[in-house]
Amino acid sequence: MTASLEWTTPRDGPVNRCHLHRKKLERVIGQNGIRVLMFLCGTPFMCEEIQSGIRMHEKIVFRTKSDDQQSVSDARVQHLNYVFEETGETIPYALFVPEAYDAEIQQPLLVSLHGLSRTYDWLMGYEGLLERADKVNFVVVTPLGYTRQGWYGSWSRGVDGRNLDVEGAYSQQDVMNVVGLVQKAYAIDRERIYLWGHSMGGSGTYHLAMEYPGMWAATAVVAPAVPQVRTLSDLRLIQHIPMLVLQGTEDRLVHSTRVWVDEMRRLNMNVEYDEMNGADHSLFISKNKKNVDRLLGFFDGKTR
Image (cartoon, rainbow, N blue to C red; front, side, top):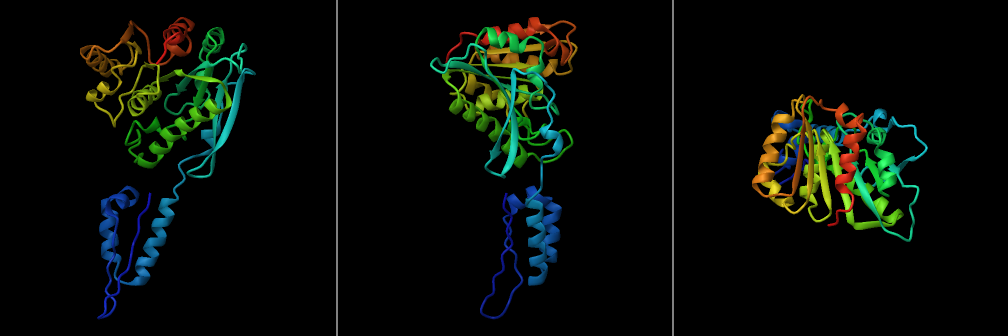
């Protein structure tokens, strides 16, 4: 994110003029801030001070210590990290490798996206997930998404109204970085890479499936939020990808989920929709082995 102020000096003497890369600058300080800048740029000194201030804004830190917290204490789960090239920060992720893993045999990869404000390893704690993954020989990875509320690039503004242009882009990039790291370190079958997410992770699943439609053998969303940066028409991008949708009737998101599923059916997508009467937003998947089995069973055997 770059915002620059530039001075020009014509032959007849200095003229105070700021050239603003307006669109990019608006993301930093907003339209009102731009008006103030244009008013204040009356001397080179003022512009220099303002430019310095903008640089400070550009170095906004999105991450906090809570982004590195973990919730799952299980010897089967590896808590790893890597350096995020764009910022130089160390970003965590969690990994599960099945006991029967053989480096000579390519294995499926299940990319799992957590919900809003959850820890990066949160999904590893869903009851029965690791046991079922071990049974079907799935490598499972849970990226952070750069921050715990980055939305994987699927939202333009956070629930608190903040702009997610940069944080969201980093969130999306973190997922893809982690997928690449796992592919380099393990024998992963490129024809069997699966993507799923819960709540915010469901929104991210929609978005990343549409952003990289040639990558996923199958996808699933559980109680998904609607991606702000996508519309129903974007479902055409993933018509070819099998999708499982799990939704509870006691979750306020059920109404938007029905709308999206109706469009999937209209497009003749290969979609399985299970609307569970009386189920809530979270516990019907996180504390329910039967539904976790349903989730992983949906992926088992599917190829791109």
